[in-house]
Length: 172
Image (tube, rainbow, N blue to C red):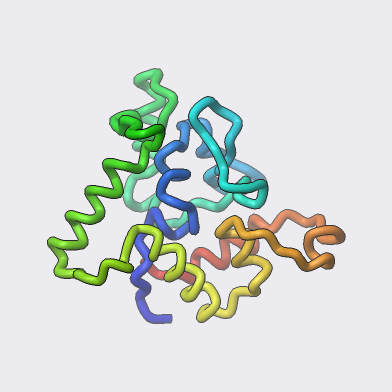
């Protein structure tokens, strides 16, 4: 597959605000796989809906970029937020990163106003579909509800291995 335009942090289909509100203890090991837990179990964390609550394998590109070392360095300070430098503006931690992305986009010559950080979610979905990943698995990765009875009621296996394999198909 050709290299994707998906950015490393967007390789999980998470919304910007959900990434900004991560805590160091949201990076976990589950079933032997390093994962990011997107949840609302701590003060200041919220979800769009119940489907947004999920555990996702960490993309290898984030590990290569030093994510695990960053987690440990923040943890060593005793601070619990993964990005402690972010300050809430009108109750949202994503304000500064959103502004930064806008400046970065301008610097790169991207003038299309429709291209926002959220566009990476769309790109990830397209890239996963192009890589032949099943729609039900794509929905789990990006936190969309899968209304299919077969998978939502009867399916009980953890999809972590399948999600890890799917995310590894995406080149960053």
